[in-house]
Length: 526
Figure 1: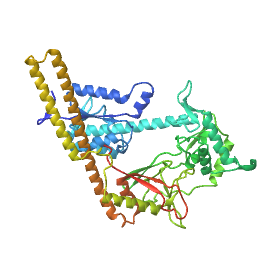
Figure 2 (figure 1 turned 180 degrees about the horizontal axis):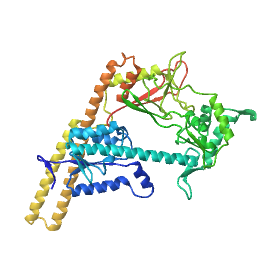
Figure 3 (figure 1 turned 60 degrees about the vertical axis):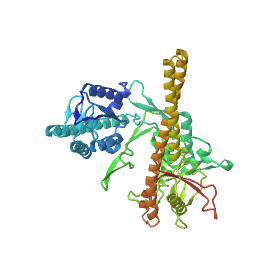
Figure 4 (figure 1 turned 90 degrees about the horizontal axis):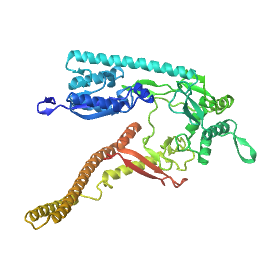
């Protein structure tokens, strides 16, 4: 019998999370962890007569709450008092993060009075002893996590020093393979990709053949352009960029080395928020690898020498946004995000970062002005496109009335068919044929009526979304032109615009304004 509070059945949910140990166990054929845990907890809830109405499946193994979207959703609902209890396999499935995350989880359950239920114990936050036991369990799970993490890091470091490849993704030019008769992985050359790697290093260090058989050294941008001209796919499957070429040229894996902890994760607290960065480290591990090199160490050393002569200026960590359209404008031709390029002699320009792309640049202030004009047009008049499927409220009402009349008529006809059968007017075969046809007609009308109602609901949702969107547009348009803070401008635009497509096919004096943009607003997908 279900436990009740007042006249309501108590509601419970299941939270599932995969740990790093689970992921490793799955590689050894122990089955899908979340599925096994869900089955076990569902059977436990059934035997304990707990009404489970939702299951949260965390498919990522995040250390913090910020990295676990399902946990964020669960805590929001627990805080609102939606659940009487949360069912988990173990306490450590809830939190293995730092003391701040553990405190957030502990207080959320405490203040809402939500129970934490495991197959071995029920934790009631209102009970002082359970609260202490729960907090101690979180502390021990965090300690266990740190122990496991240290052990894994030591194991990876030992593997690197043995020349094994420990990253999950192989670099371009190689494929990751299991080492025979030993633990761990190494790399095997992919011939067609290795040829491209050799060309990149050769062109950069020795040169590429030009007219009259003369070789000329070319830089990373020209290498990217040459590879794109030859229609060779990049590591991502798209076009080559200067940054991709630069990353290849400084990677010692291609001369037979294994590099580890070159860009280890660093955390900083900025304005109360944890910022994760991956700066280049000087104290990385570099060892001889078990894999076959694609280039010689001399060629790699030459590449580093030339790279050192063309150092890029570092970007300041405290640099403020100088582009009000940052992260918004997309090149319509190659799909890359457009970037601001400062130009002291004229004005800043917005350009595609891909060297081989023929989408021409425009002055940033002209693109921004066009965006603002589009927003002002939205604020003046916004038309629903395709969301209503060609229906209006009156159309729905009229169609529903017509379907109600047709449904009533069919139901009356079915009733008369029964009367005709009972009075002997219809024999059994005639009645069966007539009643089946009418029943099918009734089902078709009911189905069509439901479809019309669904369209009406969709229109209502769309209109509500547009009204909310319009309110935001009005607010932004009313203050945007008076703002001087570029960061504030960018933040405002990001709340109402998903992205902006940009294309310009002609350049030169007199054609500055001959570009096109398409704004894609942020509206609910459903």
